[in-house]
Amino acid sequence: MRRIFIILLALVIVLGGAAAIYFLRPIEGPVRDLSLTADVERGQYVMRLGGCVACHTDLKNDGALLAGGPPLKTPFGDFIAPNITSHPDAGIGDWSVEEFARAMSVGEGPGGKHYYPAFPYDNYTVMSDQDIVDLYAALMASSPVAEKAPDHNLGFPFNIRLAMLGWKNLFFEPRRFEPNPEKSALWNRGAYLAQGPAHCGACHTPRNILGASDTSQYFMGARGGTGGSFVPPITPESLKADGWDEATLTDALTGGFTPDFDTLGGSMGEVINESLVHWTEQDIQALVTYLLEGE
Image (cartoon, rainbow, N blue to C red; front, side):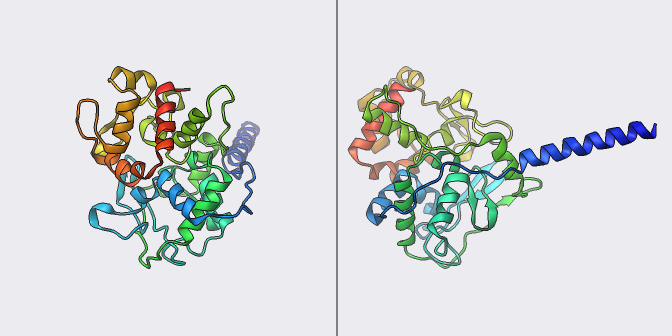
C-alpha cells in the first residue's frame, strides 16, 4: 500500500512539474528592430490607428489625454486603461523603447508584469517595427500627467497576474503580420489594420470562458459592448446581408451613420470619433476592402 502511495505521489509531482514547466514558459516572439529612426508625427497617427486615445482617456469625465480611461466592465471584473503619458512615475515616461515594444508584443511590462488581454497585445503583436518605434516616440512626446490611473478592480483568482503567463501559453502566440501575396496591396493594408492596431476582433469576436478570442468565430459578433450590449458581426456575409456596401460602410466608419440612417453610438461611436475620423481616406478604403472581401 505504501509503495502504491509513493508511486502515485511521484506521478503527481512529475505531472505537476511538467504542467508548471509548460504554463510558466517565458513568452518570446520574433525579434524587433528598434534601431529604426522614429517619427513623432507618424507615431501620433499610429496612436489614432490603435485607438489609444479612446481607451486611455476618460472622455466622459473630461479626463486628461492618455491619462487613464474609464472602467471596462467584464465578467472578470473592471479593467482600467492606465496612464500612458510621458510622466516618469504616473505614466510610462521612464520606459525604454525595448520595454514598450515588449509590452506591445508579448503583453509584459517592466519587471515582468504580465498584462491582461483587456489590453489587446494579441493584436498589437502583429504591428510593424516602424509603427512600434513611432508610437513610442509619440507617447514620449505627449504631455505628462502626474496622476496615476486607478488599479483594476478584480476579485480572486483573476487578480493573480502570474496566472496570465499560463493564459498566454494556452492562448497567445506572438507574431508579425504576413501579407497575403494573392491579395491586393489595399486588401493587405486593411488586413494589417484590422488584425493589428485597430484590433477589430477584440470587440467583434466572441471570447471563451477564460477570456480568449474564439478564432473559429472570427468577426462573428460578441457580447461586451457598452452596458454589456451585443457587438454585431462584421463578416463579409453579415455586412452584405445587412445592406452594407463600400459606400455605406465608408460613410459609417467616418460619419457614424448606418444604411438606415441610424447612428452608431456607444463604444463604436468613441472608436469613430477618437480614431477612425483621423484616418486617411486610403486607410479607410483599405479597411472597408478587407471587411467586405474577407479572408
